[in-house]
Length: 356
Image 1 (tube, rainbow, N blue to C red):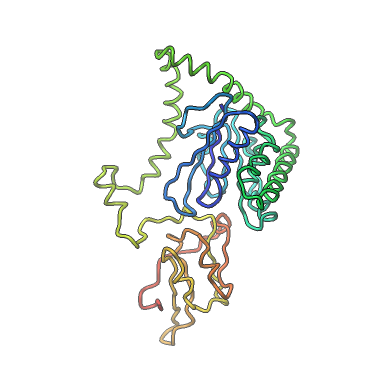
Image 2 (cartoon, helix red, strand yellow):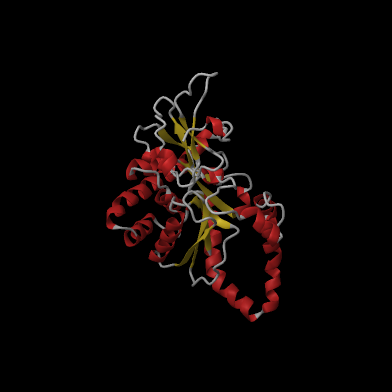
């Protein structure tokens, strides 16, 4: 069985990509299963999706802890420990402008490629096209057929074009690295094919002989233990995992953001001080109340012109402020670029310096 793990943010189309890959696999005569896993169901929040492909019907609906391919639709979700999610011979597909020497990582600017064709950065079909280049069981034609059967007709040709261009980009990247036939992907494909061929027999054997199942437990335990440090770090903010303590630490009255969610952003708003008129439209339209107007005082003089200031601890990067600004004073900048130049403290100004 071939397993694909998709990492994305709400609104980037990770689940759509997972479903399209499943549809493409069925076009190729295989069986497939696709499903998502959401945390906070909000635009910009990290989420995962899974695709499983096999030659026999798939009954395992559990999340994949290790996969043949791990696809990152957002560069900010790629970090230390990524190897733990790969099967031996597995491959990472990464939407980024960065370069990597690790042969397991196939990285290219899927946002830029899709924006050039679609008019906005939606990387899912670009990554699908690249995946078709390195996974032998699904072809570019299968991806195209899935797009045509699952999307509105006006989206067919643009997304097929994006997938085809990404396929060629992946081919060029592999050729530039001198990878003939992409042996890493071939190894993953061979392992997956072997798994698909033996899946039904293995399932039948385990069903007939329950005593045989403990033989696979050590590997499962090793994989589970590998995720313990990551899980601990995720819950490090909680004083305790006791239900009573945990509820008090994470549940608050409606209308208040008290837990930092800056990790949800893929883009952040940057305010042009010269263009900002402090009209307050961004403050009114921000869905989470994370923008305030800060007046800068010089001695005892009258306040200088107020300036819109996002609170980057809580801003989720939805971009509504930029769309509503009539003066073009707010631009959305990729978060991965802004990380190199910290924006400084994001603590709201004292009340005496804030103008409504």
